[in-house]
Length: 434
Ligand code: EPU
Image 1: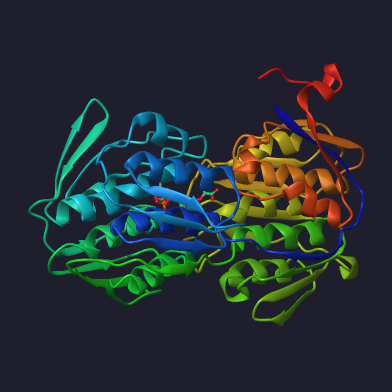
Image 2: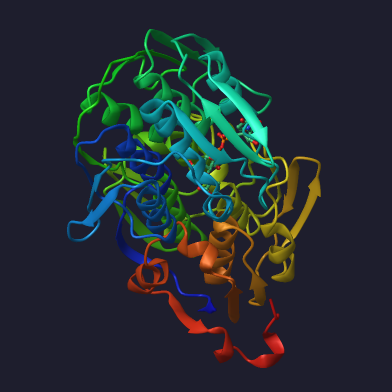
């Protein structure tokens, strides 16, 4: 197993180019199953999650061919309806193939994914949506058997207790594209990744209106065709790199992003006293070196365009060093605070009160061996390590590899002292045996 060794204290300087969005590319890859014609996807990030999704497409029967760096052609000729538990268990987002299989084959057999470390993560809204379309769904031994032979367009309200659902919206839109009649989805997710999916589906011949809004109208068509599509930039990767500039008091410019997708996040950086320059619609610069006084702030995570839960852990790492008391409230995953006990090991002062973290800023963090528990928590620990004195060893970084392409190389290019090593290279007294 690999670990990251970070020797903190270097201010990061320079430019980073953002890659394709993981959370856009997974449903986009699933959408290639909607047609038997070839689809070409470009700007696919080279991440373990994307590779895993390609494996699932192969498993369903698609021909998957690389087209050079970050591009893939998928031709989904004859498909099979069953997705095994082994695959869905390893990556929850594989549930995205459900909508495409239902649309194309009128049936699917897919396991219920179960919970994960960031929360319960039920899929009741996905199921409700498909039932509203007239699908029958039987659950046998954890396996959903879906029959969509009598499905028709319908009205679906897709809001739940935590707001809209991103992959639920993706599944329902995909299912509706080839379902006769008009489907109206209210309380649809407005995340940019859903907009990107709808744009690809429209290129394939789907009839969708209201893209980007909470009301989507999908008129079923008989057939979809192949297309070529470029995955949108990863707003979470962009935000994480900007935080690297802020937390190290450096000067980092992120290019190739869509700054419009970062509204709530940039607003909070500004409120926290971090100077930001929006250089163009695709470039933003953070001047950690010009910070006079950091200010404590309150953050509440919400569905887009609210503050994204996927940047909560990383921002909490910054707030751990902001004098005063900040309050971070999770409205999407009320228990998504696994990074907190690890930050405490580094000297942070944070208390969890229900869905909120009360963060009392400390003057400095100190390096420690820490354990990554999920993707964004891992990124938070890396950020803390960059700002801490001494050495931080981040273990179980396979979580990080799910969502950040060549993270340590990009950080090193900005001046960080970071190395990917084998766990055996860690001083034995620091190692936690997994
Ligand atoms: N929810 C339900 N019922 C459902 C579906 C969701 O109650 O049927 C709840 C969830 O438990 C959660 C909230 O609704 O409390 C939002 O869940 P959502 O369905 O929107 O999440 P998701 O689609 O499973 C995607 C991203 C996550 C990101 C969330 C929220 C992908 C592949 N994953 O998950 O990304 O946190 O939206 O924005 O798009 C990450 O990248 O680290 C990550 C976890």
